[in-house]
Image (tube, rainbow, N blue to C red; front, side, top):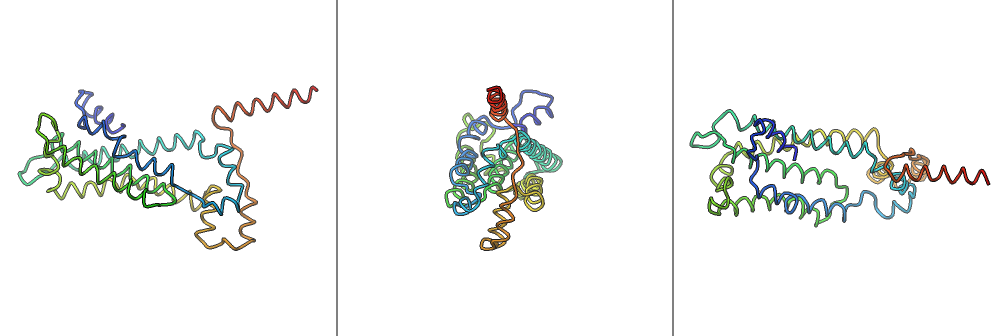
Amino acid sequence: GFTVFLYEANASFSGQPAYNDWFLSLYNVFFTSLPVIAMGVFDQDVSARFCLKFPLLYQEGVQNVLFRWRRIFGWMFNGVCQAIIIFFFCTKAVEPQAFNNDGKVAGLDIFGATMYTCVVWAVNCQMALAISYFTLIQHLFIWGGIALWYLFLLAYGAMPPSISTTAYKVFVESLAPSPSFWLVTLFVVISALVPYFSYSAIRMRFFPMYHNMIQWIRHEGHCDDPEYCNMVRQRSIRSTTVGFTARSMARNNCLEDGIYDHR
């Protein structure tokens, strides 16, 4: 959504859409929704055996550690950063030079399809980076969502111009034969994912949460080291007060304690 806003701001809010109407309509339906569902259903950051071995893991859910506002705003900031990288890199990449063999520069149809391709790749690869436990279904949904976008672009572009409008043969005649399209997609997607990947690597290594510590135990082979496991168990999770529910419960506890003291 933020790439659309950036395009409108760059076009002086002319009302000309950056993407084809069907691109926008199918974004959350086919190209990016299934990986989110697969992650919510099948992802497993810590195995059941380790959950039983380290019951302190459940405090992360009770104390709202994974749903605090700072984390939510962090994901929003990550999306804004990716949108800025995708928009400006795509703009500068397709703007100055001839795009195809006929010497024509990239028009709105080429620019919109290129930027949308980068968005689909970035969102699905972002999900791949966030998943801790891959299954066949997750692989199918993530890479299948990307493949579905190209198949849709082929099928939709083959329809008459009255139906496909700006997408008419844009992939077959303009995007696919152009090496710059594939290079731009690769470069822009990697650039968009670097900030999140760097942040995740630093946090995982130097500022791990409790479930990250358990993941390190499994990764480094300390599962059967009782001294190391006992040291991790002693690490308590910092108390957090985030969210309306947490604040309401805290107030209720204070009231109940006051009533009990008066009695």
